[in-house]
Length: 311
Image (cartoon, rainbow, N blue to C red; front, side, top):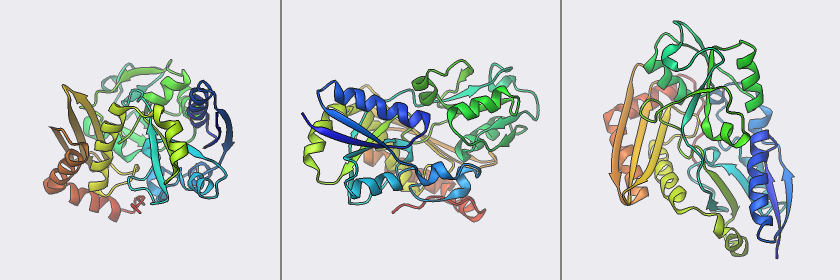
């Protein structure tokens, strides 16, 4: 059996994900070592993500470790990976997907609709902010950074009336006690790739690729490829007000996508089915651009929201 070195960020959730992959590999008889690597995104914790604008802010240092052969594979939340990888790398596996939806967490309130006027909501995501404001223009949105425990502590301490987080992270960590509502995709379309893990390796490392093949989930690969094709067509990174959710239904792929102004005053949604994930993603992206998505995204860039550019 092989000896494999895994690179991971050091956050609680990143380590859960890395240990999950370690366990699956060890169950196959491999010897696994874990190297924790601090990324740019881990170092900048007092600025809203949309304002940072560093391409690959959660992946750059992990990729450097791959290039330098300090690690053989890197475990990422797929939504952190730029849609176009450098030719030095490839995604060897996309694992079975957790629930990709967002959840409403609160101590006092049962749902978004139950919040009082002018309630304080914590999120650093322009995508979540835009869809919340479209639903409830009165809500006061405040940036909240930090790991899952930090965010939940701020909620419990009364800093916010509610926060919105990814269901996947809370489910993986077993921290679901404050989830009050799983938000329907039609109300809050998730980030492209949310809930999926990506295993990145050096391009051409066929030996490692073969060892990881069993981790690749066909449905997760197809749906996230579709979502990322849409994101690529729109020219956005994970910090822009773009949502994408694909699912396999009856052998076909159904894609729901959204582009919205951060203040929620304009929300463009599009749903379509197709057989080719890349073509479907590009077609829906093109439609959204023609419907006014190009103007919305130009406004976002122009208002000083630093957005990760594609390589």
